[in-house]
Length: 254
View 1 (tube, rainbow, N blue to C red):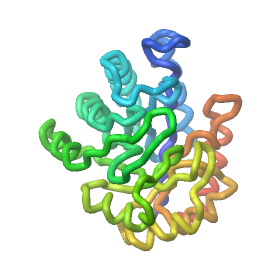
View 2: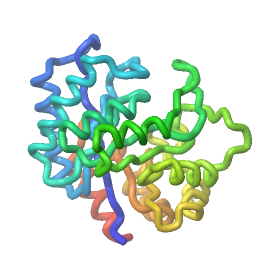
View 3: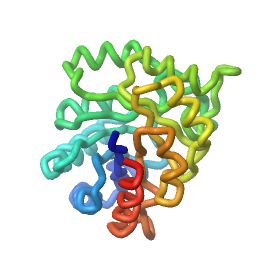
């Protein structure tokens, strides 16, 4: 089966953050990244408020409004599926934006695993409530891609394996699971990917960090594709040359 590559559109700081450049600039930059990613051959894009530091655990009204504006403009111009992730832990906001703006999927870092982050404490997880909300707003066509044992966070469930997390996420209603390394730009261990795929079977498994042209051959044996951001950037901006190089390498494993 064809390997799926999802390119990241990282937004500049949104309203309320010190270095917010204005919404006109935010939209213009996002559309520029979309054009590069599409021309480079990715299969989908994922829009994320990456540069809102520090992240709000639950998005304020200004973040939801700004992301709705950007995502709606991207959907209008995009020829490929568009996804949404509102950081740090607001999958309901992601679903609502996706529903209103016509996006096709969301990513949520926290879904079934009890995780703790130094800056924020224990992350709230509520898969049943999220699925109920999805049904309530009639967003059943929108896919949920869920991280398991996600980067930057510590698992609070002693002895829980990657395989157990994958099984739990599938049962809870995820449409795909994501495996990451410990931090952004660091690939997951091949053993973790293999363990996840063993449990998932034909169910989609994606690499969520550190995927590159250099390690594609090693990682694609155990997954259905990857979400890519860091490795396709040059001087902080998405590089058409790097996107094309990555896609060319991935096609060798389709």
